[in-house]
Length: 222
Image 1 (tube, one colour):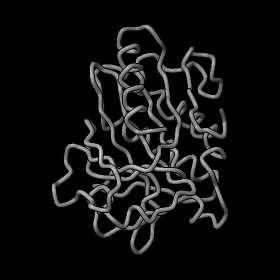
Image 2: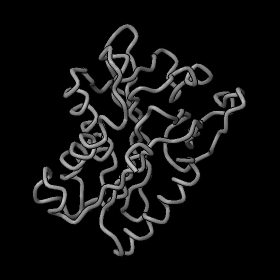
Image 3: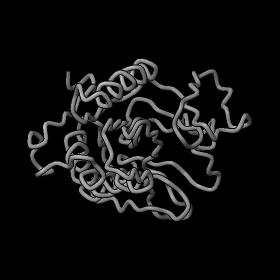
Image 4: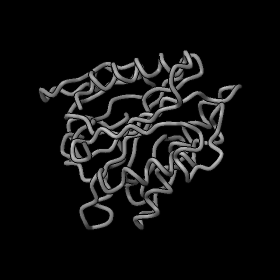
């Protein structure tokens, strides 16, 4: 899905959740290849390889999105008082739990957001960038499933020069697609985000208990 189209859809859904016209919603999708530059991106970090760069209203620096990367955009109302750090940690935990199902030891690294696979150097499996407006979230977490990671060579991913980027496919030694993991990502997001929500699900394993919605926009599933 084109990044700008997905961003506009997020804004529309965000307005609906803020106004109470729809329940908490999560978008699961893949993007066409694009760089997105968060508010902390320095001018020198912008790539010059000809690929589109979109300046965006999330935190963080520059990263890449594209085929073979599953992006989860939770548009959810957070409990008060809003704790953005706890929300980011919940997104990371969902990916850590998902990776464990595939035998990959994801973890957090002190002072760095996202989910990492330990090594020398550490390898970034998933990036996190969020925005919270009027108590409702936008943007989210991007998990590399079977992406061609060569686009990351044109940037310093998330402004971290002493690390590498990896994927579930590279770490497991077998192809793991976004379609393969999307249902489990939705399940782990429900469980991990429940403590952060204004109205948490009564049973995170049952998708209909709280009336929330997961919208999957991966072409192979539609």
